[in-house]
Length: 212
Figure 1 (spheres, rainbow, N blue to C red):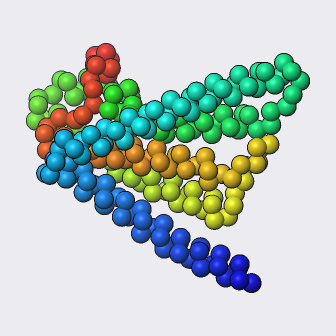
Figure 2: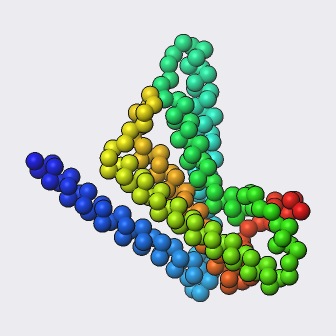
Figure 3: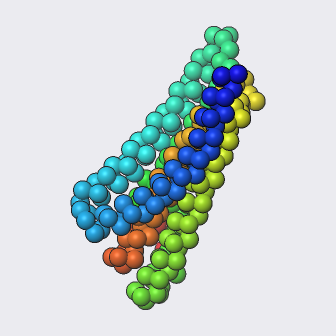
């Protein structure tokens, strides 16, 4: 009985905390990006660049994990052993690598971007188009982050378990999706405010200029 009461109190606390905490993170992220221009641009910029770089390194680590899983599975087949759940673990690693790499890839110009229209219009119109694009991207990014957070929370609350042989608690791999989504939303907001205040984004143009 005591355990049920304690779990009920914990769930009630997390129900309240999950919405308040995410709204706090959203407001804090926007205010921090603004502060990066108004207060100490160099110091805060290093923090954001470090966050994007760390996310990219983590994504690379998950790609290495996929390679390792493939090799281990090959060795297991050669030796007649069984490695249950290897495909599921590889799928979790692929999802984590994808979401964690989004922000770093954005700032390095690795996302597909057709720049024919932007390069053909005057500077003023280009500024408005960039604001429009990054504004929508930021809104969608935070929208996805919020519902990814909710999705993972309900997976934890109902103790959802993978239907594969791995029987993994699904909130564990889903957490990488939440973290990657939030970092991407921060990066999009960062670029959005950078365009408004400086007239240019922070994306490297060497990659997508090849589409011209």
